[in-house]
Length: 80
Image (tube, rainbow, N blue to C red; front, side, top):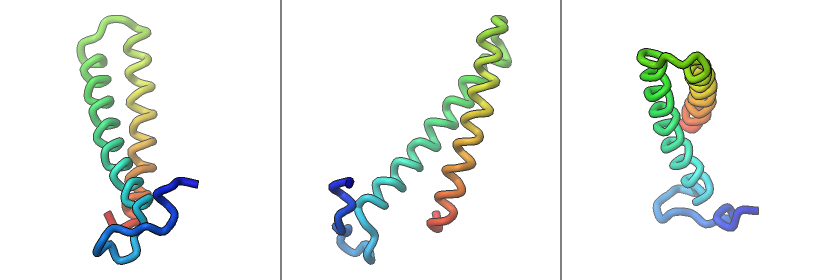
């Protein structure tokens, strides 16, 4: 069990656990990280000549978009 999930709440947090706040922060930061990965992979697709690197870039874009969709759904469920 996560030590933060015990039942601690942020002052004025209206019963929101610290674990929930950490998860929210994690997801928001990971979303930005995934967007940056897509940006870099798109540069490779636009300029790269190596077939293996271009294939990897395409796979990265697809995977990151799926994970962003998961993060967005989770954030939406929590009103974010």
